Length: 580
Image (cartoon, rainbow, N blue to C red; front, side):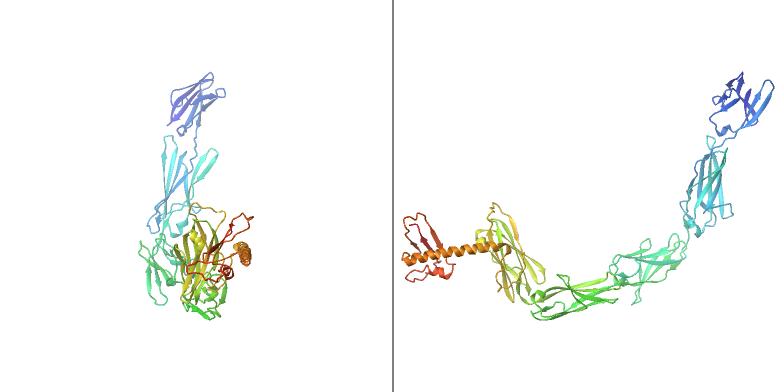
């Protein structure tokens, strides 16, 4: 048996079979043919589209006969790709314009392409739809199909979905593959312009407001915005951003008015106007209190009136600044029988109930005439010698007081409010300062007052270098210059013990002196020192010093028997030598 391939009606011997053995002839099929099924079947491998032809088998014995076989080759194309026109299409075009291109690669035989818009197939339509297809034969013999859809589009096609479909045949039957859906940009002139305001609803001063110009054209026209003043009817031109948006970062009442957008189509030069829209910025402004600087004598009365300007109904209330307590609901606050404690800040709050968050406040300070008022009258501090100490003193009054200190140091003043002042003094703790303490003196035209700070060395502290500590008021005492000392809570126990010890020492000393006086063994004179002979059994030595800051009764015990008076310059110190 001999096998032939027939190309252009010319048979070419490609394979011989003799006695069940096969032999390939030189040529394109030399290495692709083989016998199967005991020599009755010829197998062909590595099929290509070039193999689509007639194959002829011719028998020699016992009878001469031949048989023709038509070989068909099929190859499914790859998934189709679609490329949309990146420049877009204008509805004003007079002829079909390219919408998209569909490409199907490496298929055999040539597939068929069908175009769809919104799920409906497109067919050739004169001056409306044109489909132009071409194919390329690859070196492999496979086909690459390229199809271009051209069409005239309308404004309604701005959201249309286009895709292509490839139809091809395999031995198993007909098949198809679809591309992705695409949308082409459609350009059309605007027919309407309108205006939007964000946020919607009631606006108030301070809000961020966006005024947007919108149109139904693509691309949008060039926008300008005009505002008409409601009272003066004057028109102001405004230039929005490229997107047609005018942003008011902090809206004010001056932004209220009638707004209108104008759109200019740069291609057709047609101009469109939107409807006017009112923008109302609600406000509360120019709130004031009368009198602006209220002042009164103690026991007097004051009337504070609050007013505000607004385009809406306003509600008022009065608050105490330092406590936040609501004192009065209404524009007028009556204050009667004023005391020093009534001085300070009062806040009027004007609120618009119909516009959430819209309010304004005004703070006014009420001054009560009076001498300085000290936050703290007295204070005792435990300190370390050679430490740098910050002493603080706070006073208030009307007129506002000034503060001075009894010791040298670096003072700094801070205004707490219009009626109060805080002075901080930095000093070095010296023996002199420990002895004298520090006095803070506050004064104004109506009087003066003071705070005394006593310093005591802490038993456990031994300082070798400067250290910083601070004395600040911890207890508020509404004190004046005639008030009594307010003991420190932490020093009460120490004070009681100290007083008790002093009383006992003075009692014993008085008893001893009185005893010797009665015995006649205490001859006192001007020399300032007298010796007293003790019994031999008393071997201890005592020296007792009595200073002049003791009670008058004690000083009387030290007067000479002759009634001599103290000489000028005599500091009143008397010494008793009890060594014998």
